[in-house]
Image 1 (cartoon, rainbow, N blue to C red):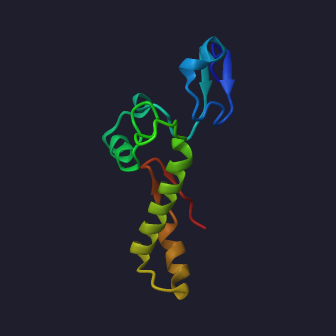
Image 2: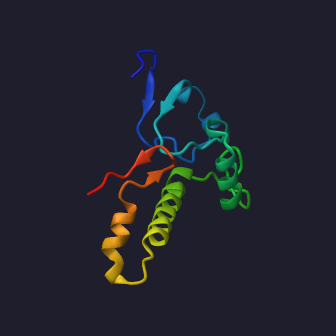
Length: 120
């Protein structure tokens, strides 16, 4: 950890909160999360596309309602579904009999191009 960090929040400590309204109590606070609320923290073409698909703006608000959205919860579900989709496609899965091929197809899969699911 950096010794200059004075306030550190646990995972999801400020999820779906409007930190601007919380004021001084969260000023300078760092929170660890699996997916950033604000587009500026991960301003990539893929992240912009993802936000467009799920209907979330640059500030982490649902476009249709204006409600703050916990992107880290939603992102985990999407990442899991795409891993399953990849496993099905790579293994040619058709039925329960293909479960071993499906598992082998998932071993070593790259997630977000950074992490790898270790074999066995």
